[in-house]
Image: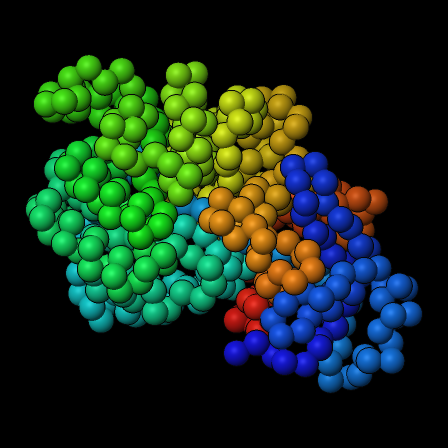
Length: 433
């Protein structure tokens, strides 16, 4: 239940609006009632307007701490928490060596429940209050995730019917029966999730997509993460009746009904201009995972740099994700850092922290259809916010400088990003302190 009384929060406040615009209050006041944002204004104006209503019990002064909207992580695998810092040589090898053996353990109900309790606590402590999440193939693991998660998330059990380890292979009928059952059980919280074209048969993708569309559920999978993956996908599909003439990876998803305005394609690094046209036409979104795609020396899989400018030019919606466990750390601060750093190294100057913040908050909320209720501090939106303590000398003339200082301090100790947040609020209630 949201707190009924009016609450006043003082601090340094950033309110992302677009890729280039972010409100900045060096001293601001956030007013919350019944779990909703009622006002956001500079402290002088705030005190003039509200001082008669402010008391010791309804006012929290966070001092020189930063107040930000909670993060949306639009692509992550909660069942890969254990393998996120494992050695990564290549995507397909890493899956076989570490990821699949780890995911097999989630068949055990007690194991899944224990892991879910720990993982979703960690997620809230990293300031993430929404997004799109992959589970393992197992119903018990999805149930555990659904019962422990706090926030606005869609979650799906991955579907694997071919080219998969024996213990992670389902029959087509099992995959479709489980999809039907889980949509009935969780409605729009369920996300239809073929792992990727390599592991999921066209029949399962096609029939499952129809079920998901009918129920207005989201759909998610992986697309064009590495050249080796693309070659392998095409070599498989060109032997499947009806797919002999596919010219690219995107076409496979188009033919199986996987694309659309509620479709989230993870990665999308190596896409041709024809594929971009199809994604735009179908209103499919791409989720970019910079820490996962980063060079191997930076604990990534070395998949390549996402060309966000090309994607923007093609008018495709996109947002950021951590891709736990391809990405090594839970915090979206680390994802923002990686996005800016990788682009800077290639002299792409438009990749700013302000853009990274927008793509980690409001952009994700909009893709999930929550743009009117979450993602930033507009009036009447849910009061979803995080508090980040700052050192006294951390000041800035604008949002870019403030974000640069906060994120810059841990570039060489990246695991500390997961501990930057001191409080996380969802709909006005503290879900982490």
